[in-house]
Amino acid sequence: MNTVDALTLRGGHCANFLDTGGKATAQTIKETFRIICSDPRIRAIFVNIFGGLTRCDMIAEGIIMAFRDLDLKVPVVVRLRGTNEEIGQKMVSLTKISTRLRF
Image (cartoon, rainbow, N blue to C red):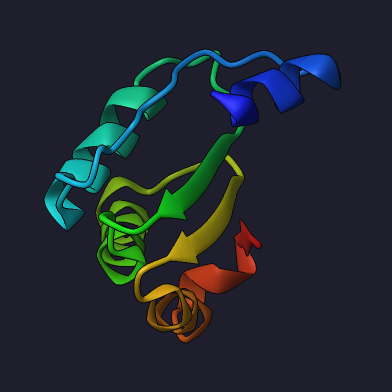
């Protein structure tokens, strides 16, 4: 919720908020992107992972799947901190989509 507060304080507006709660899978993340992008008003997606239960490499895999399978048109900002964060960051940086992502 701090992320939502910080964005709001700086003039942003959050259309959706998802707390993965440590149970998300790569497929769940991809499906989340599909649902979010079905709204034509979405102008950007901000992924902020901070935790110990949620594996950053699994989140990165889901983001990569979303870019590969969903032909995303909006900018995506990703912050990965927590379990396997270095692996997740490297996964994204080694893909062709990394030029469309912002860290």
